[in-house]
Image 1 (cartoon, rainbow, N blue to C red):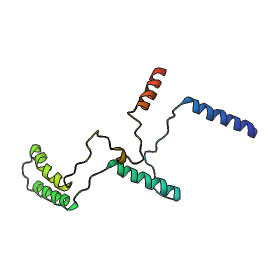
Image 2 (cartoon, rainbow, N blue to C red):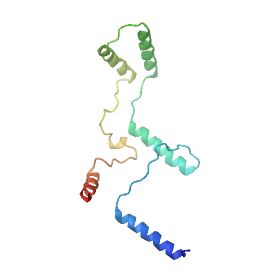
Image 3 (cartoon, one colour):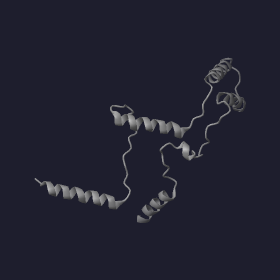
Image 4 (cartoon, rainbow, N blue to C red):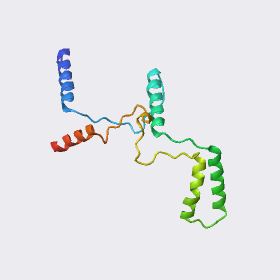
Length: 140
């Protein structure tokens, strides 16, 4: 078998080689566990969930107004009235304003302000990302 110093030298060469190669791809777990089995799990996962809610920044809503609107819409559907999509969209605006208490969710494509990003850092698009992308495209 190999002796201990040979294994350590190979490990050091491998680590040094990885550092010289630049950015590496990491595997992402598509279904991570949010179970908390120890103190470190509590610290990391609690912070992650808090940061996700901060980033999403969903507006508050009036639960009673939502329930009333849903009941009203279900009743109108059961009366077999003719439903035109244009009328539905127009009639939904006051309902949504009432449900969302006059607030509106952040628009699609609108970036959150820095204080609403939690501990997340946007990596793309950015000058650093564009530099890395250009570097890899030039290697081809």
